[in-house]
Length: 104
Image 1: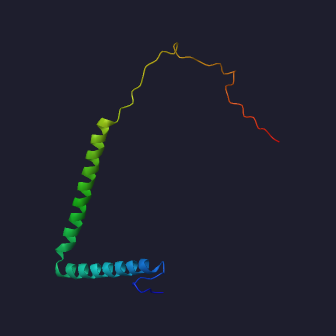
Image 2: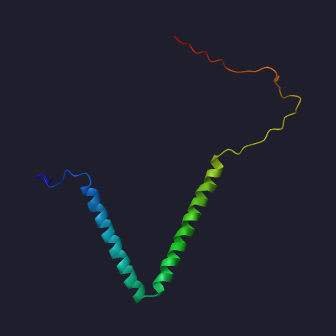
Image 3: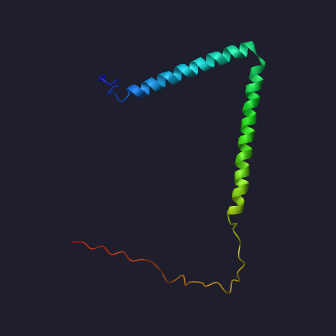
């Protein structure tokens, strides 16, 4: 039902319109891209090369951020301890918590 100010009460109306416009734009883009590839066959090579270039730059950016992050993270250091100084607990004694249920 359309009101006086021009929008609808239907919850799916705006989503459907956006979906329809997106499909139409995507179809138009693919059609224009197909025509351009027929006109300029080298366009496929340029598209593929630009995709590889973009992927390479993205991987370099991520690697640089990881490299910078390495300085912030404290590396784990092993500590050498003698076996004589380690406190061993008696395995015969059980350390645990007692849970008590109060039932009425």
